Image (tube, rainbow, N blue to C red; front, side, top):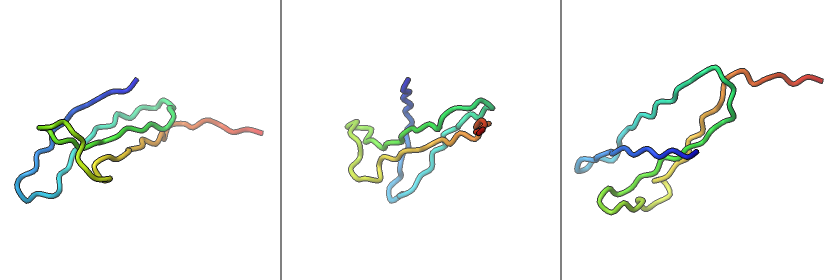
Length: 71
């Protein structure tokens, strides 16, 4: 089930970089790798900002007990 989360990043005049923190909760349960996207929008128009670098995919790699492969 897709989840949407909105957060505002405000840039001051001349500022070209900012940082956001997205907390990932780790557990010991095996799950497949999961992806989510981070997109940048203009808050006044709700339109996605122009350019290829305003949307990125983040992949959470599962690191829990991958199982056994037995022959």
